[in-house]
Length: 280
Ligand code: ATR
Image (tube, rainbow, N blue to C red; front, top):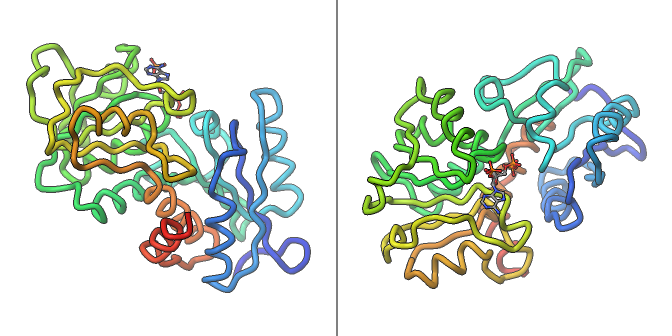
């Protein structure tokens, strides 16, 4: 049994972030709600640094059951819950909150399992996959632990080197993670993952172009609302990659795992990815 129901016999779920207008999550959750036969409203709250905590607190005080947190508040949200899943304790980054029966708030992050689900769906992972990870912000923190659990070997390249160093120090107990350096300019990477927020501003992070070979898989954690390619993927395709994907599958998968946290039912991820792609 769930702890309570909100207004109109439907649960209240929300998304907090900035920007949020572009988000496909409301449509994804509308479909999940129909599929799992549980009524819930997925409201969007545009926040700023000053009102973020106030808005989240008000939401839960007014009967909200759970929410998603998106950029730029994933790290900041670490101080909200009283309980954490192991993956949050490791990543220090939250994308899902749920109010539990004892009124405590549990913080989790479903981005990492969402990404792994999608990389497996695309057959982008193999034994000892060598990953070049662009970016060292909140999005990177959410996925590193999961990539290491899949026995990937990660090299981080970030504009601000000190952040890469901090992440390598934090995650090296879990597996092979290193800083990208000059002598790797000719290394053969299996996947290049873009976790930077550049796409939001229509730009591309700087990285050595020669690392993109026809066989290099290029994955962008961001996605495009239309069928057009993200700037990063457009660039990788131009450089010759034959295997590119945006993070749309990851978006659906992380949303499904959030849904599972709120309602204990996992929607059919593959079916939802397929349906969305064919309705675009
Ligand atoms: P998120 O939660 O989306 O990861 P974030 O924590 O602010 O957001 O991190 C954004 C990431 O994108 C960082 O790695 C950032 O690089 P810096 O650490 O140097 O700031 C990266 N980023 C943002 N704009 C960028 C740009 N124009 N070029 C390269 N990297 C950029």
